[in-house]
Length: 135
Image (cartoon, rainbow, N blue to C red):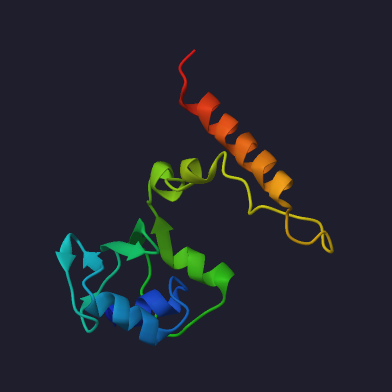
């Protein structure tokens, strides 16, 4: 069986942008192979299950093919199977729903006057009032 370093494989299949970044994540203990925390030099084989903590998500991959050279994205996706649950991939989506962008004021309008500021504050307080009340 072919074996390859876990940090090299994570980089080769394009889960991380650089091998250094992959190594740092593995060294930090955020990568598990078959539910075991590993070092960057740990050798993986086909069939191993990798759990990777990346950007607040717990991604799960199954190694289908071991490669040590970085390849293009269409080839890379054939080397692993993504078994990350859908709810894990969308866990932050609910947090952003209903959140609007920053406040916007027309260019050249200047700072709000005292009267405009009071109107804005009243509007915001009224909006908070309706969100908290149960109907």
